Amino acid sequence: MTEPMTPAAPSPRAWPLIPLLFFLVVFLGSGLYYTSAGTDFAFYQIKAPVVAMAAIVLSMLMARVAGKKVNTSVDRLLAGIGHPNLLLMCLVFLLAGAFASVSDSIGSVDATVKLGLTIIPAEWVLPALFLISAFIATAMGTSMGTIAATAPIAVGFAGATELSVPLALGAVVGGAMFGDNLSMISDTTIASTRSQGVSLKDKFRVNIWIAVPAAALTVLLLIVLGGGEHQVEAEPFRFALVVPYLLVFGLALCGLNVLAVLIVGIVTAGITGMVMMPDYTLASMNGAIYTGFEGMFEIMLLSMLIGGLSQLMTDQGGTRWVIERIHGLTRWLKLPLQRAGEVGIALLVVFANVFVANNTVAIVLTGEMARDIANDHGVDLRRSASLLDIFSCVVQGLIPYGAQVLLACSIAKLSPLALIGSIHYCWALAIAGIAAIAINRPRLPLPNREGAEA
Image (cartoon, rainbow, N blue to C red; front, side):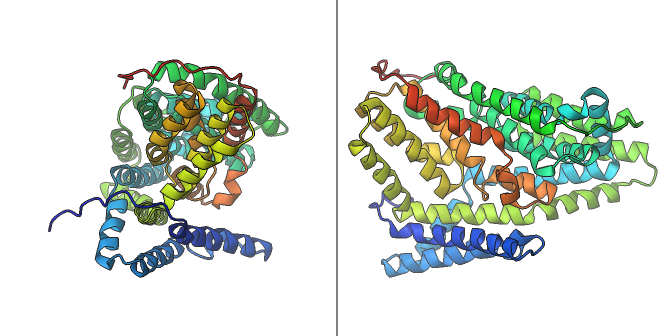
């Protein structure tokens, strides 16, 4: 079977966006309806993957009416599902679920929480979770791996200190997005700098003046929210059970690939359990791994279907329509030329990220047009790279169907909409990004730099 060729660039059209709007209306609308009715697990009454599949069928029917063959649509759907970024994300989901399950089955999560509470005062748990996640994500260059390693600990801390689970998870996701935004090895950083033709260090220097104030505001807020009567008594624990998590954190900080980190963590946790607990066998480890896989089935399926739907929309011109509308918007905004360009770049990546649900893909899709807007409006290309990364991270950390939110919620068995209001860093980063655009003094950009660092 020959591999299907990538179709030529489509004409921009609005109608291909209808299936995703259908998904959002049904997914969010049903959750809000069942919440108002007082139903438990309101956002799980209507299964998101089923709604996503219905949206895909609708997209294919619309493509068929427009003259495209069904077989062509199927090929493009499979191309979207098989995108390397998406396959990597699905593998992270599976291994994260397995690591969390095996660690929990041997008592590693409880032991790590008890160790943490002997070091960190209970009232400082929230800012500590944020800072630890930020440090790990900056070193690893991935928010997904950070959430996979840290979210189970956050849930354990919340249970031990009677803190809100959404607050604890929100601190982890926020810290992970901070690191993903600033890390030199993050795929979003590399995509944004390459698309704008600037160096990593120059983008970092611009980015840090926006991200760090947002992080500082978040830490202060978490200190306030985490205060009060949350004291707990120190309890004994076996240090050996903490080793799997310490090893995962250490390997992550060394920059090892996230898949390798999680595999090493799973094997170490299983061996630790078999050495320390006579009744913990290879069969027990196997069962725990599969239980972890099962727990990630829904999020993995939803991510694959959304990836396929995004590909269909892109092929039919939906994403290009959004991008061109934003480009046109910058031409009549009653703002100074440079500020209008920065607003256009921010809106460009925001809307692209809403529709493709992947911050790296959103940057790749919009990078060339963002560079055109920057050149047309006198925006420093270092600045446009920073804005692309910042606002893609804001959206990715707040959309209820984004991979980071879904992963954290799957680990904690929590509704996505119950979490996004507690991801304070992403809200603070949005405010900081808007403020940076509002108060930035218009100035001519530096000449474009060829041969940007990779």
